[in-house]
Image 1 (cartoon, protein in one colour):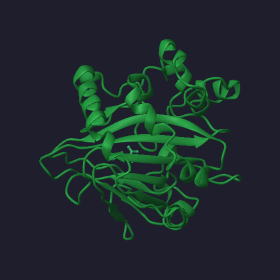
Image 2 (cartoon, rainbow, N blue to C red):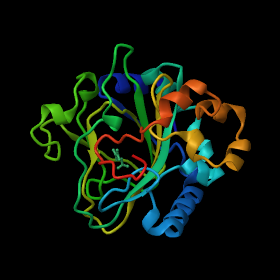
Image 3 (cartoon, helix red, strand yellow):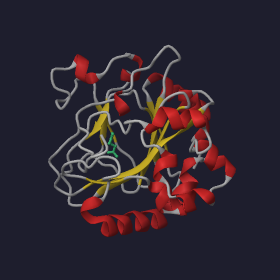
Image 4 (cartoon, rainbow, N blue to C red):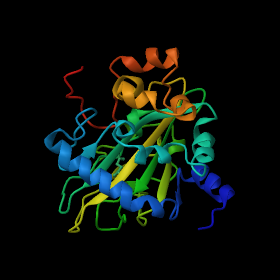
Amino acid sequence: MKFDPQSHLSELDKVGYTKLNGLFVDQLPRLRERVEQLFAEEGDRAGSEFRQEAGCRRLANLVDKGDVFHSLLLHSMIEPLAAHVLGDDFKLSSNNARSVPPGCSIRQPLHADMGAVADERGYWVCNTVWLLTDFTTENGAIRAVPGSHRSGKLPQDQMDDPLESHPDETLLTGRAGDVLVMNAHLWHGAVENRSDEHRTAIHVFYCRRDKPQQQYQRGMIRREVQAKLPSDLRLLLALDDPRNDQLSTENVRRSGFLPDNSPNK
Ligand SMILES: O=C(O)CCC(=O)C(=O)O
């Protein structure tokens, strides 16, 4: 694998996403095994700590659910790209998985994650999608509108129906083991799965430190798991950050498009 940092940074600036090919191929078997084990263990509850999504399988709070996920959070190739979008002072916002079952006919509306709009300091959300399976033209890959992160607008305010195709949208395909890094203000959303296999990915979602986490890590990760985390991960997760406690405790858990039917709100 050969990476050209400058071309990834330029792509992030210009189109709003970039792909690192084959970055975690070695870790695929362990990650796939753990994700499928969690889907089996959690059954109907899977994803309920955040939001469940009609027609698709989700997992939330992965930092709590295995060391195998921890190595993705501070990857040396990803950190500079996230910092390019967010500035150096960023934290984890959430760590989830999403899997589109074979034949799933439901698509996501175009959205920006958390419904986030860049503010006077600039961008504040950056998502990384770790492909556990190939993303093909048939199996529920992510569509995105290149350059839309620069619009300062949300699709729901600009389109009659964000479920419809956008004239400029393109499909982000890739191979298992690739990582897609997205400026998460980019208008994007996964499409239907017309194949006969699951399409599965892990999301490591970051935000600027002055914003709320999508999922309050200190409140969700069990104390015994927190106690074993090294200092660089504690910092990333904002476990010892009183400002984050304030920002992230009250009714956040915001999705860019999923309704909140959680009993916590
Ligand atoms: O399909 C995926 O893994 C990403 C979907 C997405 O954009 C989201 O759930 O916000």
